[in-house]
Image (cartoon, rainbow, N blue to C red; front, side, top):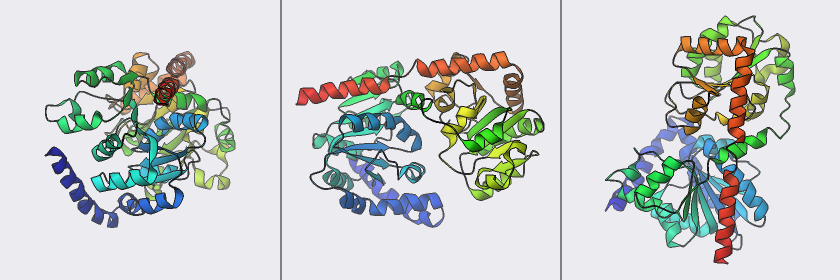
Length: 418
């Protein structure tokens, strides 16, 4: 009965979402992108191809899945990697990623779509990253005896799985052959609903970001912009973050501190509005050839794909998302470079931030005054800044290894089946 209701709601949501493409660019991608999925898959996959399927909700989950994709690509080079996204913000950024052979949206979670998708892709194994569980796909994977795994899973007691009315979603969760979770609390929650095929592997993002320090992060424009100044990088900021940062940044105008601001949204109009709020000399990344970077106090990054490398030039990082309710962005990217991390106040759903705060490698702010006090101390007290950064870097180094734990399990599982 509950599955019937779920399916009716899924079909109904498609009708509701269809007209939204006329009012939102993001929803236009969301709706229209799904119309050509099966055609794309048929064009790029043959019945004889061997495939591995990864599903990611968005960009953050892709980064978590990437270490496993890379490992399986090395171990099973004859297999094609198929990556699906739920969100346009993930698909649009990673649709040309070299790690995957095919990247598409995930078709709506209907029984017909699940059957059709699996018939074309015919994966040897399937991976869902962190969350974004789609019952019809999971039920069909189980029915067709295709091994499915959840990686970097993270569970909270207020989720439907752990409520009396959550039987339908619990049944979907039981379809996974194995679940790899980030922490002990998640394992205990799953055990409480008699799901015991669980391994604590940790978060694969630690493996992902730890490799960033090994690559060439040189950016000529950052060399020219930073010079000998102290640099604060404000990454993935939302309006709520920018509102508390603005007074401090304006107060530092003309001093030996430079700021890089990389807004989450690179909407031209919004960036133009934001630029007008600052008193300092600002250079836009898209126009850096027109501006003497050494004279600018603020560099506005109005493009995507550079933030990971830019963090390597930071002395302090502010990571956005937690001042509002949109969700904290990746704090591990700056932490891997051994720099202090500052975030907003709403991060209770992010265990990595809670832990790093407990270790004193991260500081949370609630308002403009907090922002001023924390950033001023980090700017003026070199010993405090370096000690905080050292804690952050050590936190990354001591939590790597999730990828190898998952890979070891998969190797044993494959050996047993063979």
